[in-house]
Amino acid sequence: MSNKINKFILLITVIVFITISCDKKPALKNIETDEILIETGEVQIDVSYADESFFEKYAVYDSFIDDEDYILIAFTTNVPVKDFSWLSVSINFDDNDELFYEIDKVLYSIEELHPEKPFVASWTEVGIMSCFGFSYRDEDGQKKYFVGRTGNYGEDPEEYEGPAFVYGEFFPIKNLVGRYKYTAEWPYNEDENTLILDLTETSYTLKANDVEYTGVAVFSFDDDRWYISLDEIKWAHNWIVNFLYGIPDPERFDEWVDEETYGVVLWLDEGNELEFQNRGGPMVPYVIFDGIGDMWVRLTK
Image (cartoon, rainbow, N blue to C red; front, side, top):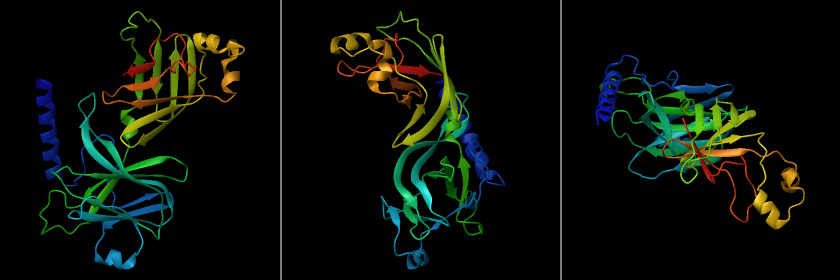
């Protein structure tokens, strides 16, 4: 109970700080400087109210309007932008009781945001720390995430003369990196196998007992959860299923599944644990890490 009270007091403190702060920048650890116009390389995305003049200029646009009574926000770009998403974003606490922005859900996605075809979304402020988010993939194929809010943040509306919205890039992946460990659960309590995963924003090191794997880690947010793909991990074999189905040469399981390199895809569950399916069912003969008893393996920080 005391921990919840401390978090509530901290949240109130941050709200007060944001309200009276001169530069009006959120005191959050995974966001950079606010900007009115977002520029990343050759990409420039402008966010403004979708008013009458906007609709006079653009007859065609993509949209996500879940309530016509809300204000409409328009996103325009100077060059085509791939994999554009409109995000539900909120503020949360990490394990160190620090505030950070996190993605709740992907509300809408389009394959390409085009200069001649903007995107319009409905949005409303709920509370003093309301924010919205969006993302896109840059020219290098990397996903970039941004959070925005109204420019008139705690000022007298009659005296405010600044921009309608301000924005900044934030880094949700920063809250996912770190060390994760496997702990056996019932009925495999006696399982002494070790599985340790060290994640950075671009790579991983995974030690399964005495075998160590290293490679590229790819983070992606799909619908309402994070997925992390680890490459360069070949699956093991399932001795029992191999025997029952007569798969030739069980010592070379990769010959049966073909010679491609397989990887592991983990997802972040509601308890902030990473989970993956370590082995298939009776009719699906594979095991990723042989010896670990659980079909569904969870890794905790």
